Each structure stands twice: as C-alpha cells, then as structure tokens.
Image (cartoon, rainbow, N blue to C red; front, side):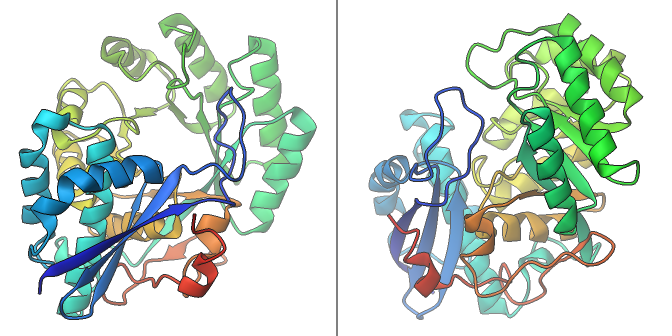
Length: 371
C-alpha cells in the first residue's frame, strides 16, 4: 500500500485562547490536520500543533521523500523523514509536520490490520483512562464558574493554566487556588500549569519552590512548567525540593531531547506532545524511556480530536498511565469526528477499540473549520 497524496487542513474559526499575552482570535490557525491517501483507497488522519503555513512549508520539503512510500510502516518512514532533513533543522516545524504524518500512518496501519493502534504499539494495558479538563485561569469569579461548568461536563480532574496565575503576586495566586478548590470540592483532582514557556518568563527557582509549597496545601496533583523550558538545572533542583510532583516537556521534540530530562530525574512527570515531538513513534519510545527511569508519562495535548485519539491509543499501550489531557470546551475536540468522546459516571474515557485511531473525520462538519 503506497502513499499517493497528503492533504494539509489548517483549522480556523474555533481556536481557543491559549493564554498568550498578545491576545487571541478564534480565526487564528494554531492546529493543522493531515489526511494521507493511499493507492488502496484507505486514508489516515493526523494532527499537528502548528500552523497550516508551517506544515505546508515542511511538506514541500518532505513530500519528495514521502511520495510512493509504504503507508503501513509508520516508524520506518517517519524516521527516514527525520534522518533525511536534519540539515533543515532538528525539530521545530519540520518535526511538527512529521508528527502529523506519523499519526496518520499509524491510523492507516491499524485500519489495514483491522486492529486498534494500541495493539500495534505493543498491546492494551487498559480499556479506559481519566481525562483531565484543560482550561485557563481567570479572575476568581469567572474561574469558579468555568470550573463548575467543567465539572458539570463530567470531569473528575481539571488542570488550570497560564494567565493570570504567576503574573501578579503571591497573594493573588493563592486566592486563585483557594477559589478553585472551594468551587470543585475535595473530590476533584486539580493540576496547575504556570506556563513557564511564555515569552520572557520572569520567575526562577525561588518563586517556583515557594509556590509549590502553597500548592501542596491545596492538594494539587502536579505543578507544570514552573520554570522556562530550557532551565534543566532549575528543574532538577525544583523536583528535588518540591512537595508536589513537577512536570514539563511539551515544547521538546525528538526522543533525544527528552533523554537528559529523564536521566537526570529533572521531573516527576514528563509530558511529550505527539502532535509536535515526532508522533506516536517517538512518543512510544519516550514513554518507555520514562518507564525505565521511573518517571511518570502524561501526554501533553492542547489538542484536536485526532490528537486526543492518538493520546488515548498511546495511553492504552503504556504499562503505567493515569491521565490524558482534554482541552475543553473546544470545537476542534467536539465537532470534527463522527464518533464522540463520552466521559462515564466515574470520570473516565473508554479508549476506542475500532481499527486505527478509532475515530473518523466528519468532512461535512470539517468544512466549517477548514481554512
């Protein structure tokens, strides 16, 4: 089965606020889908956390290497793309595009074999997993209302991130956390993402350490991106001292970038994003490296339905997995596929067992968001 065409599908009109200081418009294009076509008529869908313009540019480089390649050998084909394009940059937008290609090829591979991707990744350790609703911080009253809305949608775990947390003073940060805990009660798991990858992040180890102590008083599950993403030495020391687990990793690409973080125990939880870091092929390797170093792996997923489907398949195939990230509310999660994700009464998602990723693009609905 050979690859004959790749459609690049930028998404616009439903882009949610990512918390960046320059502001936000729903018409921004931050996510791009890829659909790979084959000479057998079978297609596969992938997702990239980057703009359509960058994906299209990368495809201009990658297509001569991809055209006519096998559609059922995702790991070999995407490693060929990676190895053949080092001179255009190791990581970045090219790796983001390779990520979407890899996910789509795994989708095709699963369909061709009549198996869910999780089984092809090594086998199923679980049939369901807990999603955590991922949302931004806000002013206290709005934050409480947003949290209550997220709980009403069935989530038993919620992550709050970025502005205005960490942007004013310590008293306000604690007010936000106190407000959140009061709004959801003690039975809902809460995570905090400081958003240390924001440009010109002003805080260092002392701020992160003292903030972690405050978060521990409110039983926060983990503290994410408390420092800039290149400060590995700071993370090593923070992880050693923090009373709550420390996590990061969403901006890293390629498995080699993750190795020092795992070898140095710089985090308690590593967070690869398969729509950026090389796809399911790289994420599987990263997850097993994490397992071998006794570091928890939780996929990062500021995502689309296709990205979530990939994360679910990976989570099923990992011996230790506790959560998947679920961006909510978000049209790109809820309105792009025929099949819907449904949270059960215990706050879990059933992992699709249909062949491939287990979800199907709804091209009629997609017209609304296709740039």
